[in-house]
Length: 286
Image (tube, rainbow, N blue to C red; front, top):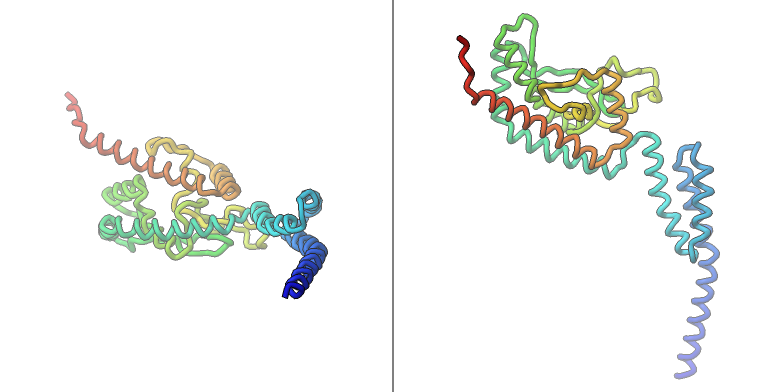
């Protein structure tokens, strides 16, 4: 019995060493193949530099298993680098934004339902046309959709309808229907300024503006240039699109949070200022 146990131990030790020697041969080859696959995901102009740097770093790692783990990690890193170079947001960020869009848009529609129905009726009554305007806009990757907004003006409208339209625009109530675009996946709560069809060069996909890498937003990056709704700066088209490009290039949860909170702050300031103005007694002129 003792001899059998000894023989089994010897055979097990031999098999372990044989497996280890085999592993030392095929694991480095597998790591090299994974590294090549990661390099192929990169833009052409970056492949040579990253391939040299990654191979050098992989050689410095202790053990073949550490090199294989490093190579596998490079697959994810290469995808992120390619997305940044192409102006495509990371998948995890898009997933988070979509979850937030659905949650917030659903909540906003439910909470604002009374105001929505009231505005719907008043727009129809005062302007005497379809309350909802369907505006053609270009979405992510060049897809055209109809952006929904409350109609705020019309030719030949009377003074009351003009005042009501200004009120809707002041508090951004005219964009409430856009939350339905958000639920349909055509827009996002935070995103670049919606693109008009004439801005899109339909000649080739390569000529599409870089901000079309993201869904257009109900709230856009240019609101960061506003300190008060009573003092909105006149931004040029180039300035607005430059902000959109910067937004797509640096898209993150932090950037979205800043834009969203700034828009909420501006709305709160406007409501507070109007409430104070309404409660303050006016001086009678002699």
